[in-house]
Structure formats: structure tokens, C-alpha cells
Image (cartoon, rainbow, N blue to C red):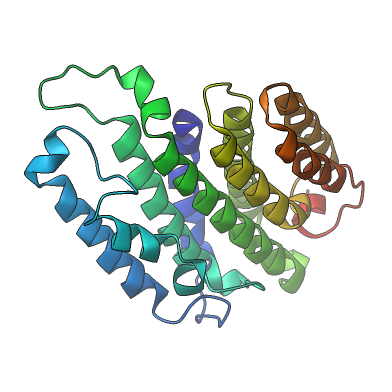
Length: 257
């Protein structure tokens, strides 16, 4: 999942510069400062002696209040609806979650005894929470992008902007696709899969509005394939996600050529 995401973080950030406008109330007040402080505290923990053997865990006494803040959507993301003017800040939020994900996937013990390939499973509780937040942020970005297309006269959307919007749409899709891949992994626990399934269901209506119809169908199929390795309680969520993706209505960013 991380390799796919890395390909699109830069294009997302570049397009944000095109869409900058006055702040919108959809985002939590002071979200940027709240997140900056929490991420700073997380980075400080990484410099402590304890981090030589393991990165901060959800259950760590020092780390718990930091995670409680970072995973509190009311403090960070606020609530729908999101507007085009929210894109820049939303991408900052996403970038922070993505940066933390790379910490866990790339963590090496001081003695070098851990296998990097196992990090995805060793730290799956933390990675699952981060995946949930990246999906939620991607849903917000999707809604904000669609607002941009719907509120901007077509003759003001240049070919360059269309290309940028297409790249951003691809990036958002890759986030959700990466999480669906995790749902298919038998080494991920039932609780983590349930949380991620709930996240993609909540994001589905916003993702549907920006993806081309054929891509939606592909997402639906991939999600249904994940049922082979998912606990029973995840099944209704996956079916709901797939049903949402099967819509053939296409307006806004979906219809932009």
C-alpha cells in the first residue's frame, strides 16, 4: 500500500496549490495546529530510548494521549461537507498520517534483528488506525474535489488542471484500494479488518462521485474478493461498499473529460 501511496502524495500536494482559497468551516477549528502539536509529540517519542526497540504503540502510556488526539476526527477533520477551499489543509492532514505509516513500515530495531517485511503485521493495530484515518481524509478530499468541479465554470478548468485532478482522483482511489488489499490479508486481525471495512463504507459515497464507472466496478469486485479472508461480521459492510460502488451515475469529477 505504501509504495502506491508514495506515487501520488506529490501530485496531490502540487494540485492543492491550484485550489487554494479561503478556509471553510467543514474542517475542525485549529485542526492544523492540533495535528502539528500531536505529530511533534509523536516524533519526540521516536527519539526516546524506548523507541530503539519499538515505535510508539497504541497501548503505551506516553503515546496513548497523542493517538487519542490524532485519531479524533472531531478535532482534526471536523465534518462533511468539505469544499474546494479545504483541499490544501486536508492534504496536510493526509500527509501526516502517511508519514506516520512510513515510520511503522520502515522501523528497524537498534540491533537490526527485526525483518521489515513483518512490520506490516507486527504493528497492524497502529497501521490499521492510520489506514482508517487516511481513508476518512480521502473521503473528505473526494468531496472537496467534486465541489471544485461543480462550482467552477468548465471554461476555467484548463487541460493542466484536468490532468492534476485526474492524478488526485487516482491517488484517492489508491488509498482505498490499498486498504481493500489489507482486508484480503489473512494475517490481519478481525477487529482491525472491521475498523477498515467501516471506514471504506463511510467513504464510499464520496469516492463514488469522483471515480469513473468502470473503476467503481473494479473496486466492488476487489472488495467482494476480500470476503474470502474476512470475518463474518465484515461481510455486510463489504456488501454495502460494493453496492455503493455499483452505481452508474456519473457527474462532477467523474464526468470530467
